[in-house]
Image 1 (cartoon, rainbow, N blue to C red):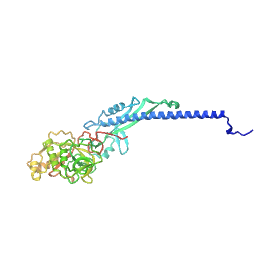
Image 2 (image 1 turned 90 degrees about the horizontal axis):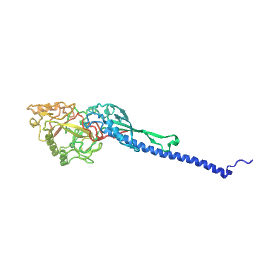
Image 3 (image 1 turned 30 degrees about the vertical axis):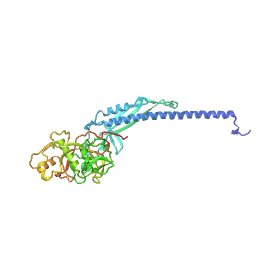
Image 4 (image 1 turned 180 degrees about the horizontal axis):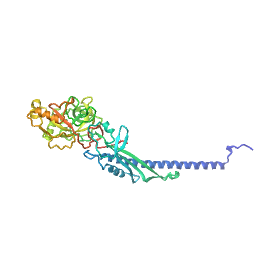
Length: 412
């Protein structure tokens, strides 16, 4: 008997092998098609679920605090849920598996659920301390899903899949004012962050300072990026008399600054202070905060925003010899303040301006950088950072100076 020779297989048998290979190829092709179509369909549905989760988390974080910033908003979770559901996944409203408010930590990149409505005091805390405090409510987590209405499997049934379930998750975080929208700050004066922090690096609102003091308190700014020096006196005067920053300002970028005395701008500021307060009430305003580690001018990085009470302004012609005439006699009467650290109204009718001034600076804890009572200096602005809750401003991205942002960001 001759040995078997594969090359001698007849045409019939070759056709049989081809049919087997064709059948296997068709099955494989169908499998790959099923995989491609179902994966694509799953990807589209998953993206739509993520869009719903993102929108819900951002909407919830945007209203996480009441409009005046004084308390956590108990309705924030419902806003997040309603917003998520308003998004469709393949023509069907997305399902919300859960909505939770809580704390996001950048140090650990984790979200800790916390249903508390208690407000954590922002004052006397560093940004790092707040980041580590799980009781500081600063985020909303939203999980969306397709469970009741699973994602259809077009070809998956071949492999035993009738449909697919899927989830998406997003965390919206509300931080501190960084990018500042037009008119978020009120006057063309930038305060140094070093003048607002205590030696431990915490934001302090129970001690006041004054401008100018050396090169570490504050200076003029025209709010503009990509410029050196805010030296145009007419521009600064118009900004003093206007409604705040005309353009958006970006956290981390330099704004033009000037540490010199711009007399026409200062005179306009003094006149407006008199009109606003009759020299008897604090003047509440929100100002940009800058990094002054390398001094002030010609430009400094924007690091946040702060709300202060301007307590007194001394004009350029009010030198020490005129203190009896110009020193304050009453402060705080009729002021609309909801500041838990407000030391109370003050009055002193002594004919001695020095005595009135010493009493005034002691009552409101106005000090120089050495911790001594602030002295009388012409062309100076004395301010006390406000400890009250403030209306959120700008976009998330700045440091803690007591002002929460208005616009949140997605962090997870």
